[in-house]
Length: 234
Image (tube, rainbow, N blue to C red):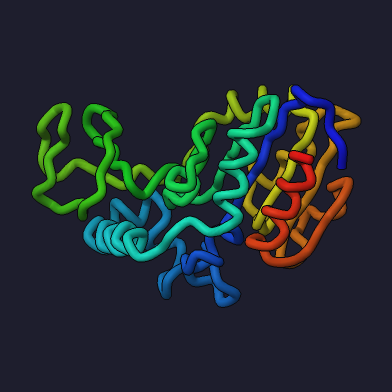
């Protein structure tokens, strides 16, 4: 694949890119996420029904991040951003911070971030690396017990969709890495690019939307992504 210098690249990443760092993919074959039904921990209704369970679930996920590191695929995408003579935007569905730690800076967390909290009273979003507890106070308005994980739950609108849409319309290459293709709107991004745009899927297995991509490569992200980045930079 050859692109002219200055061409813009948009990359969508999903759970598959973080799985090789030791983080379990979002939903297993049995429909569970970390042994919980998604409906019990990843919806606004679940938070209203049992806020302690939801907070405990995300507190555990937040602590897990301390035991994992970015892998070769994360580092390769950060390298591409540094060395490519054009715009490189990474849009991730993942709520972990592995892209950030690898060095990606032009980065959108469309489903939110584990290491941030949001106040239900004033809407303030802040960095938060510890547990969110019943006695936790908002750093902005000081209200106690009104913080929630800064995560986009099912039934909520993903973040920065306008910016993502603009980037997709202008890009010369769109690549999807480690995505299942069954979570929208991200699964529809490949259909939003302009006619003639290069599209590539890098996945362990074919996704639900593989047939829409111009090219597909299957294998481990830690092998495919560094090789692909090397190919582009040559």
